[in-house]
Length: 247
Image (cartoon, rainbow, N blue to C red):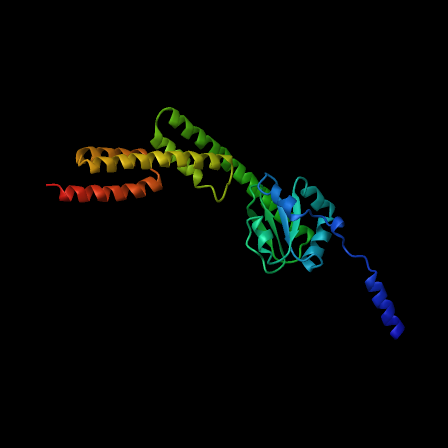
C-alpha cells in the first residue's frame, strides 16, 4: 500500500504541466495594446491552472476555433485583478469566465461557464457582428463630421455644433477617430460660445441692456451646446435681474 502511494505521488510530481510559453494567449500588456485596434480581443478570466483556463486551452486548440481566431488576440487575466481588468475597460470578475471585446475595444459577449468549442465560436461571432455594425455606424459618423467641417467653412457654427454634438454622443459605444475629432471641434465651439456670453456680461456691466439682449439671443441660438446653453440660462437670469432693477 505504501509503495503504491509513493508511486502515485511520484507520478503526480512529474506529471506535465502547462507552461507559460505553451499557452495559447499573450500577455496582458501586449493584448491591451491591441484593444480597440479593429480586431477581436478574447479575455479569459481564470487562474493559470483553473478550470476556465484548462477548458480554454482545449477549445482554442480546435481547428475551427483556430480558423475563427485569425487576426484576433487572446489573453488571460486572474479573477478580481482590477488593474488587468481596467486595461480592457472591464469590471473585475470574481468568478471565471470569458469575455470577447469587439474591434472597438468594448465587451460584445460573455460566457460564464467553462468554454467549449461552440461557446467560444459563439463569443467570437458576437464580437465580429458587433464590430461590423459599428463600422457601418462609423461611416455615418465620418460623414457627419465632414458636414460639420463644411458648415464651419460656410461660417455656420449652429449647424456645425449640431453635427459634432450628434457624433460625440457615440463616444461610449463607437469610440473612433470621428468621435475624437467631433469632441475636439465641440471644445473649440464651446469656448467661442462662452466667450460670446462674456460679451453679454460686458454689455450688462455697461448697462447696455438692449445690446445685452441681442447678444444673448445670438449666442444661445448660434451655439446649441449643453455647456453654452446652461451658462446662457445664468446670463439670462442676470439680465432679468438687471432689467428688474433698471429705472
